[in-house]
Length: 308
Image (cartoon, rainbow, N blue to C red; front, side, top):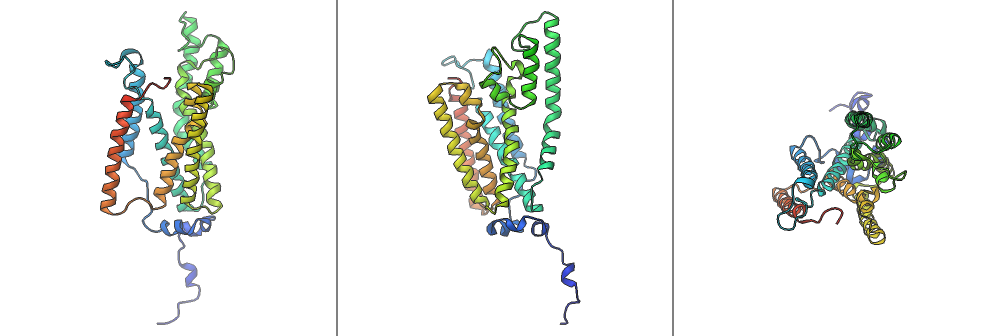
């Protein structure tokens, strides 16, 4: 066989995951999986189902607040429906982390500009509609003589300040530390969870990109996420024991970080190729998931109310 023509090697295409800046800083074990059988998210209807169940449990919990009671002890039913928020946070952490890692594998980097643009396009239109509706109610309700601290806070200043707080994604902290006496978010009170999501979107992509650029592997970053989970749980216990404030222990970003970081850790381990590949391993994983779902269902029914 003859020698290859001069320059032939220059024409050999280089995979983007290797050629892109920053790709060589990926941990060796992670790089080996990029071209192999690494986990790919794609569209998974089962995750849509999990999201739907999480939302449904929260809706049912709030609907039964005024119209449904447990026939055994008169408490809200399902009493643990608020745990749907935790499920949603875990799912959010998993999806965002997986998508960011796949972008890193594909391009060798994480574009924060593109990430935040996608988040804005996904979330801002719906939020804008809600805030416009809230503004209309805030103006019209007092004009027609309707007074309700839930639909329209008492003063004009408070009505507009509540909309501003939501727009700044600070609703959870405003619920804990009201910016003024008698402040209430009214019908916008549910936006506390959206605020935590946006705060997570602001911090996690930057932190993940920094850690990947420093050469940390996915297992190492998952271990750091695990430490964050423990710290968050400890802070929640400390807050509850020291203050007895259920609202502080329920909607604070620091005490909610454990659910988000749990999803992040699972996404990191999945993209590191640590999911079972054999048929038996996948069956065991499916069985464990079924047991966890049953256990979670029981907790949703039997858990005490959030403010108990």
